[in-house]
Image 1 (tube, helix red, strand yellow):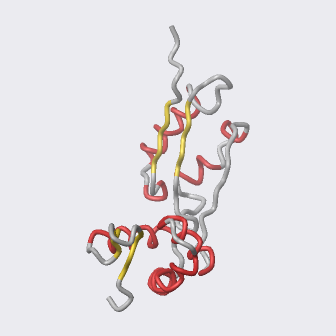
Image 2: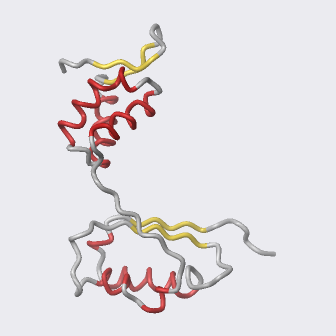
Length: 146
């Protein structure tokens, strides 16, 4: 019998990983993971650009010739502009952009469009009750003043 499900490994903040941890990831990728054509293994590694140099173990892994032939995609996550942020907030809250523009503007001013900060701020606003669902209005509402 064979195992049909894809195994997924997601590691964040790899720029701070030590040599032993990176070596373990390398072994996973080379042994039965990405280098194998029929493997059902998905690896998602996240790191901050600009926080590694050529001596960092992560950088050596990224330049590893054995892994170069593996299928990989480099995704760069930049800060959003205000219009993109408005679209994201609008879609998240299932409201028209004209209704979320004021909230989006506040979020943009506080986060400068950094996706991580946007997400954390929206969660915080919800937990604090500043961004909340209204059953009577059947939509999300917030306090501009707070």
